[in-house]
Length: 116
Image (cartoon, rainbow, N blue to C red; front, side, top):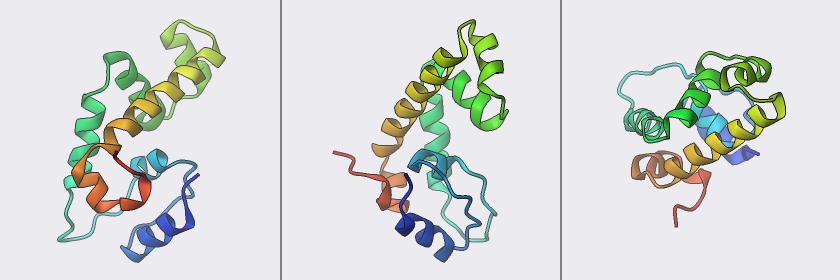
């Protein structure tokens, strides 16, 4: 669960925040671009997604960018809906791990965990 401190941090920095369930959801949500902001964290998210296995990358893109339901993801993955949900959880965990080890993300969002 994303902490209230993280939400306050985002609001302080002028972001329009949707209540996210996890730190990864928080990082993946759209934001309103403001001038003169350091956007290295965006590059870090793109790089973290690119570092995933092709299957995990397709899952992240389908769920977060195409906004497809798990039933559609299950059809694409040729598996059951519960298994598609588990595969999504594994892909999100892999993305979360990649983001935790990125210096730009840790510098911008120190609230998302310890990179050790």
